[in-house]
Length: 275
Ligand code: OGA
Ligand code: MN
Image 1: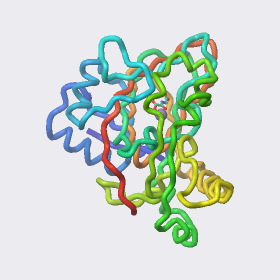
Image 2 (image 1 turned 90 degrees about the horizontal axis):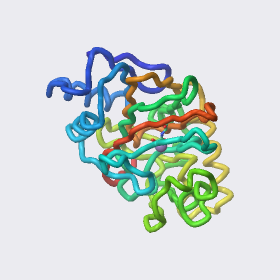
Image 3 (image 1 turned 90 degrees about the vertical axis):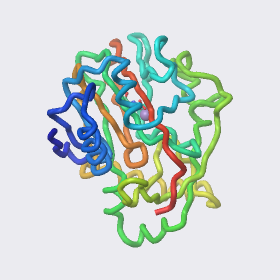
């Protein structure tokens, strides 16, 4: 098994089939996951039952509250864009599930049907981005907490409800907020991570909304730089496994008129602690 850094976020793992890997390969893979926070795989043979098997070997599965699942497997979410659909899922920078009290550990995304071109996924490394913050900004973030929500997207009149994504979304009974430290200590690597994201972070706890906005936008601009990001082009057999506590992701929506279907399994995480 070889692990080589990919652009400025993540690493490509080669010489490994996720289906049928040995226990010692799994141990090696865990180490690579904790080191890089994002792993890419090519040429995998990973039908849904093997996708599930790999996920279960790695951790405990959690089911997303809003996406539909496949008919056969209640633990596999469909990230689907139909030919006729304009809006895609995850089209802006975000971290999944930051609106949960115990945000997901990560997701394993498998390409099932791809457009001829386009539909790349971008990633950003929030541990590297934190390290590179000026000391004065690191000081400002100390002890801060932020409110994360899904209401503006999935709630009544939420943005997604107003688009042609609405048909694919689950009910509104699980809409809600969570509060997390702005700088977290990564539970595995021990690294400090900047844990805010444009998709779900609303404002700093106890701050004026506009003051929050200003600092959040500054932080988002800092993260969204080439030295912290990568751009992954999917091919048949590609698999991506991201650490949801350490990365942002965002899907390009540049393939109108074509279908794109991915299968996602999400792994359960735990409450986050301040860094
Ligand atoms: C997701 C997501 C991005 C993509 O599955 O959470 O944002 O490229 N997907 O499909
Ligand atoms: Mn996502």
